[in-house]
Length: 361
Image (spheres, rainbow, N blue to C red):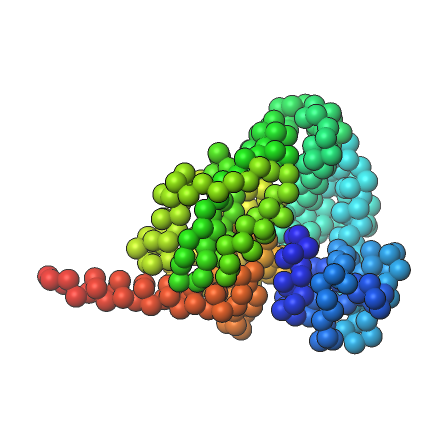
């Protein structure tokens, strides 16, 4: 999750993300939960931390109003899983077996497997693979060659890296090395019922779909998301894909199946695949999606995966709602989410009524 997404969640005081991160206020040196009811500081005064312990190490103290430490630090189960994650990260050259990890925290291998997957949505082995790919990305972005980054991240051979790269990097390592740092991204914009729509793509597929009020703001956000890429406007090249998305919003094309070029963890990809299975005009709760993934306790993780979706509409994260039926947050504004869902329901109902009125039925 990037800081822009964290800020949107913080500004919305979304309780679904309590425990996912904390934010610190530089002027007061206090850190809080995302849902803290205190007055929101200015964005330039806020810094984000993955956990309360990281905020404390940076010299911040916990808020007395929202008590951010009480969420995770007092839960021994979460502390145990954090120890497993740290052990994996501190042994980058090998993938510790489930038995070794279980012995490290004093539980049985089967219990560790169940609890880890329930909380994070992936197994310890998948977590280790994701962290290894993260190290590869970081090495490449710091200027290392693919070969150097490969061994620096702990991959024993090129075949192991390429085996994982296609499904999790979204492109081959060589393409990531060249494209991630200097990719050519084309974009176009258009008017739609939700305001302004931006579609951006690499040669491999769509890498961003965003909604807003002004083209300039959307283009600036795209450049911030891909600061090392070459970005240019090309209305003609993306016309067909843009028209498909506009037709989708009009109800003329219920299923979108455009090529994508996006980066994701193993768990994010599973969540996004589940989102794409939700029928047009319907919704699923974060909890229902977590159950469908076989990780009933991972509802919050599902919510976080929805929030980091870079291609809205193509991956319909607007169809995910809270357990009580309320809409929750949405990167492009809750009103847009409400309009999207209402429009889909109305269009689906109209199509159904039209079918029942056909002659011979």
